[in-house]
Image (cartoon, rainbow, N blue to C red; front, side):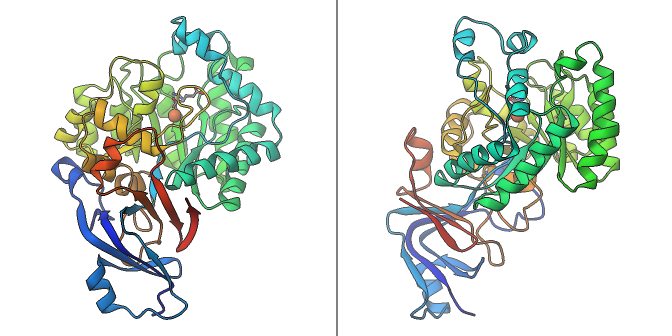
Length: 420
Ligand code: NIG
Ligand code: FE
């Protein structure tokens, strides 16, 4: 087999192993293989061998065409996977910062027609080409910070045409740059203003018009709902998710973020792949998610940015057996951050997760949360050669430093796509 790329002499190659079938939970959440003086051999788009530099050099033949990367002083991780983003939207919301600093709550800004609804206005006004250009730009920022795969939600259109426009833009962004995007339909993100007095009418539109068209056009792999006080109730969420499931989509939820409605319990009952946010998840919700192996996607950057004083109970979730993933929740309002490296810091400091737990949460468990665990999320023979190289002596260093992009090289499908 022809080796096209060889990465050698890495201070550490760090990855989970053998977790492509089931997400890691409990004490396995921190199960990592750390190879000192590590190497990764790549053929075309795929990994063929991972081991110590001596082992790998012993087993493979390098020829004049093999690109050889000396990774001395670098930590090699699987390309990072961001399993919850809203990366395609119009406009931005920097003007809301002043309101937030005056103490106006997040849901109050929305009730005044701002928040999500102001991004809906900007997204409806934007052409598909503008959405694509912005999306490409945001994805390139993500790539430069080590993210090689991301989930991408619609949800700032909230009309059939604008939701389809957004999902088509997501598809175009996916094709136009290296970060692979997994599309999620989030028509039930908020009730748009034209349906303010008729939320059930909007639900009917989501279920009977949007969902069938999204599925018919093959524009989404998952369906998500913002289950929250004043947004969509548990019963309304159930209606949308059951309809989506019947049409063959996987399920996700924005659950138990601000009010403890019982979204986690619903996610477990419906067999959702993940429930996300979970700041105020109940003990019963934790137990049900653990029993049904629903992945808890925690978004601590959002908690940080909303200046909340309590974070999701990550320790309790891990100790009860919920597989935990982490994401940026990149969006124009509650989390204008698309850098998973910052999430490493916040998760360690405020969720009290260990660096090893965090690495698995942004690689293999995140890959499970987007249904791609057989292809990405770990460095194992046969998987895509998606790699992130950081200037660091060891992986704990990534949790220790913050605010600096430590990426030195990003490799997507065997090709160097970022070099610092
Ligand atoms: O995941 N929680 C709901 N939706 C987004 C926020 C969207 C917005 O504020 O624009 C979230 O935090
Ligand atoms: Fe979100």
